[in-house]
Every structure is written in C-alpha cells, then in structure tokens.
Image 1: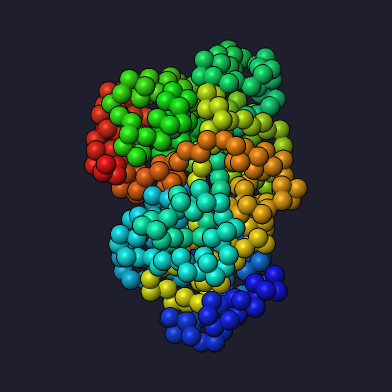
Image 2: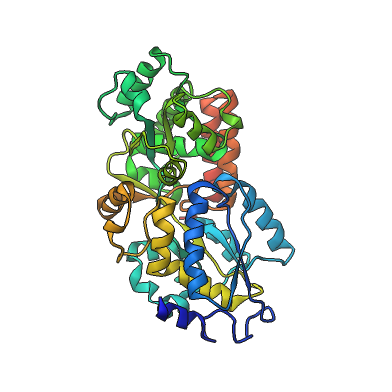
Length: 414
C-alpha cells in the first residue's frame, strides 16, 4: 500500500498533486459508474477506501447513474462524450463493447501503464488477449463476473419436493412444473431487457455448447441454424414460467420475488450473491444454469482513461488502484465477483467467490453480449430490440430472423 501511495503521488503516474494534470490540475476524480446500491455500491465503497489511502492528493467524486447493467448510465455517458465533457473515468465492460469508444477515439491506450504497474503479469494471458484491441489495452478490469448462474430460494424449492439440482434443460422444466403445481406464484423470476437476454444466452449455451455459442459472436456459427431455433423454443417455454410483468422489472425486483418466497429460481450474474448478503437474505442456493456444464460465461467491469479527462494523473491513480491487489480484494469481497489478478488468495473470499475462483481456472470461458464481452454496443442494441419484441409477441421465426440480421450487420468480417 505504501508503494502504491508513493507511485500514485508521483508526477509520472499519480494523483496530480504536482499540478501537472491534463485539465489544469483538478484534484477531483469523477468516477462514472452504474453502481448505485446494494452489493455493487458496497464494492465501490471498498475500492474508494483504498483509493483514498493510496491517492491522497485526489478526491473521489461519485458520478454513479442508477440502472442495472448501465442501461441508463450509458445514455448519459454517450451524451457527455458527444459534448466533449467526459468524466475523469467511466465504467465499461471489458471486451468487444470497448470497440465503440476506441473507434470513436474517445479513450486512451493504457499499454504502457500495464507494464509500469505490473498488470501485464498480474492478469492472466487469456484475459489480456480478450481485452486487447489491435495489440493495445484500453481498460483496467476490476473483476471477473460469471453470468450463467441460477439462484434459488432453498425453502421454496425444497417445499416443492425438489431435492437435487437440475443439470439438464429437461430436469429444469420438470422442476419448474413442480413449483407451479405447488402453487408457487412465479417459478422463474425475470426482469426486463438485458436480464431476458442473459436467460436466453444461458439457454443457447445449453443447446449449442460453448464452442458453437462463442461462434455466434465471431461469425463461425449460423444464427439461422436448427440449434438456435431449438434454443429460442426452449427460451419461449421458460417464459411461460416467469412473472407476466417481467418487462417492468429490474433485476433487483425479480430478486425480491426470490427473497419474499414468491419465486423458486432466477438466472442472474454472480453479483446477486453480494446483493443478497448485503440485504441480509441467506436462504439462497446457486448452481450453473442447467445444461451449461463446465462453461463459465464471463464479463468484466473495467475503467478507462477518456481523452480530455480533466485530471488525467488522478485518473491514472484510480486505475492503478483498480488493478492493485489491495483494490481488487476490497472491491471483489463485497461485489460478489472474483479478482482479475491471479495472485489473489481464495481464503480472503466468501464461499461463492471461492467456488467461482476454482471454476474460472478449469471451465471453458464464453463471452456475454448484454455485458459487452461478446459484442459491440450497436449489436447489443439490435439484440435488445429483437428480444424486447419477442417478450410480447413470442414469434420464434421473427426473433431468429432479427438476430441473424443483427449478426450480418455487426459480426466481425471473416
């Protein structure tokens, strides 16, 4: 920590205390995120605590805009970037999502800082490859999240006579029928837009397998294929077990159904573990989504250095804190994710994170479109529009045609 504080206070990489920052020596560092409450806010607070110790010449300014997965924040951010008024740093999903900012010339290359701060050896090579664009790295991941996790209310599930975790789609549908027969109001809790996309992707992983699922995003798997048709039909079947008002729910509203015993299951990323713990709900179970096997659908929250940041030196101190061992520990123990660094000790983490850290080492990694590791923001928007329509009309062929058209427009050209 002392080394980090000294480095961040230096004129070369630090807090701007020397008055040499790009925007005229501002001491504030506006950190723009969508972490406004629950486990997400707790994780941010932990990271801020380390920043305040390490970067004493700078003041953290919370620029959070509430809304799950950044649905609201991204709109506000886009407007600010267009107006030439970027925050000092902003949260973005690592991976393909960053290509929009890179192509627009809105964020800086951090490759030199990676070497200076030792992040080129602290992060695993596979992750570095995934977040590199044209041989350059533009963000610092704070964590690794898992998207394809099925959460449950253990009392509700056991009360329906379910004694073993479902491992196939057929098992899962049978268990949902048991919950319905028992009078459970919502066997499978679900929210709107991106939460529906997450459930759909988990189904596609089960029906296509990890290699073909990844191929949907790199152009090697045909969106018009029979396996995708099967996936859409399975997803349509699952929707029949969900709450009819799903299009009005955020993910935390769906989570509340689990906490109140009104739902049996919910598909959600592993930030749910920290959120449930923060809210004092302990009667929950978790497993990989049925049929996903040893597939780890990953995403990473990361931070960037925008071009034109008012306090570039202070931002670099924030970024170094984000990538540091102390920063990642303070953040991830509260956020429910696991550290991107390979030198973290599992003993420092709660039970769920320990299990996730073990899986991350051996499972097959696949990306996520709604969380930016698989596709650009334009592609995300096209998928969101198509699935939003499907939530109402449930037209299988129309959804498949729309997804194939989106891939034709946005997929990397072979």
